[in-house]
Each structure stands twice: as structure tokens, then as C-alpha cells.
Image (cartoon, rainbow, N blue to C red):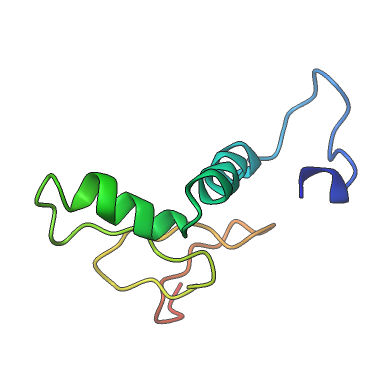
Length: 86
């Protein structure tokens, strides 16, 4: 996953934010646990703590309900909500 793309910048130059270091441990946890990460979070963390309104979206779920914070669109400086508004 991380090596599909060449580096964006030379060493010691400004950098572009990347979530690979967060995605990779999730993939490892899914492989080790034998279940999707969202299910593991629910069973091991959210459920036992009684966090009924807390969730981790599935990896293939690109929807983002309005109650969640919204990030930036890749390679732009535009913030966009799930409704498509900027």
C-alpha cells in the first residue's frame, strides 16, 4: 500500500500528510484477529465500555453522517461535508 506511490518530497523537505501508519496496524489487527477491525473495536472496546453511540466505520464505508467531523478532500485544500457542501 505505502510503496505504490513514489515519495512526494525529498528528505528534510515539507511533507504531505499520510494515514498509512494508521491504516497498516489496522490491517495487521484484522489479519491477527480474523475479523474486520470495526467488529473487533465493537466487541473488545466499545461494547464492554457501554459506548452505544461510538463506532468505527467499515473500511469500505465512505459515508460520513453529519454528526461526525469532516476532513479534507485528497490533494485539495477544500473541506467538504458528506452532503457535498463546501
